[in-house]
Length: 157
Image 1 (cartoon, one colour):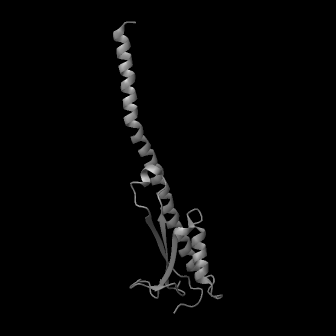
Image 2 (cartoon, rainbow, N blue to C red):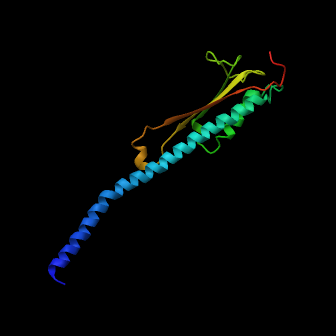
Image 3 (tube, rainbow, N blue to C red):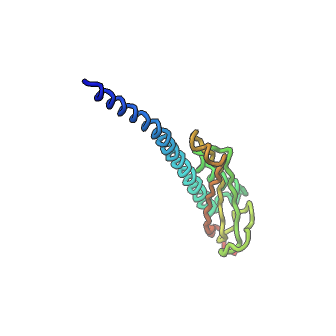
């Protein structure tokens, strides 16, 4: 081998090392962003589904006779959130006497038969991947809610 061939080969190896040094941080950032985005999307879907579970439970009227209906609705909703960090979850229940849902509704009241009930969930998502978390806010609020018309477990007013 002559000296020119050796120099060309070592230049190519050096260029490959420089290219790799430039590309690896970008690739790591993309992989971390995909992981973080997937986890945030999973959390949002879980919040949405838990709100649906709570609203479906609210519509049945279970616990009305015992006076534990609100607590049972919140417990059913929280059961749907069991895979998330429980410290950063808020569940709220409210109702409206008519189906137009005009106004703010009545807080902490699942409503009576044939009334509109809403279950809302607020989850504060905390990013966890090291590279991406430094670019995002400390917490990201994820909201989910669902409304259902209560079944007529008693005659409607």
